[in-house]
Image 1: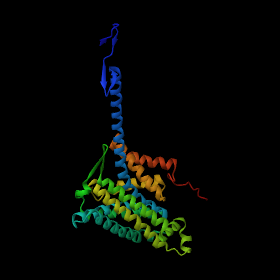
Image 2: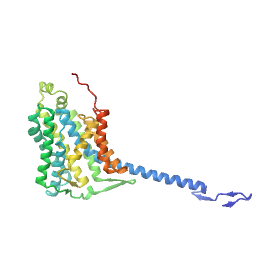
Image 3: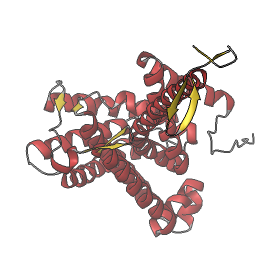
Image 4: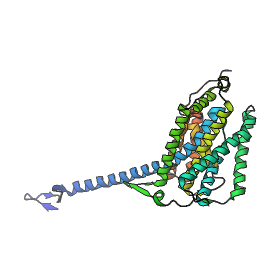
Length: 336
């Protein structure tokens, strides 16, 4: 310490950018700056987790749209839908590895072939049971799901397969102020947004979209108005299956590994997303998919990854207890 001319102790001073600080002031400033840096680090980590959650949520949203559209039309929970997503991943894998095609051609081929698979499932398994009890159709859906899984296992083998690594511009990473964004994440988000806009256009602006909405409200009335109900239902399965196929190949390039049973858990989580947003409501499936994806990543990042699945299904239980119709759904009382 330094004494002044009156014998009193004064704090030593430091000159910084032409300003004079005492040691107490300087230590306070350092503590504040360290706190801000720490706070900034937490913000960066949170934003990074949210970006990762949006990528995962995009995939859940694409799968959930298939669930919600089919349920909106014929009140069927199509559990085989998650295995169409798995087939999309395998089709993309074989296009990239055996045919040496790029991402975009593989995506288009996967969507087309999954469309054909979805329509075939509807024609062979569900159409003959359209007037049967719901439990019969539900059991059939589970049976179709298991059939697809084990046929795929017999053909492609049970081993995990790895997607080829992305090269060139597809392998680029972007550092945005400490936040890392990969080109795969941008592709997933961009593809999902384009497909969702296209879906909304089809449903809202086209003739077949109007037919889908009419059939979802009242099949008998739609039939009396001259709408081909069978064609409309098949088209709905085709749309949902195409989106599932796209989700499959997006998962392949993002996680780099696929297997015949990969559709089971993501399919259930996408179903939770559809229920959360309001099953049968297209915007609700989108919101639910992103919500579930972000929640799952936050639980893994800030908690324990072992609990992420439990948290997702706990959300399903809470939604069914508090608001069974979902976030955007309306509770309708049935007259008896």
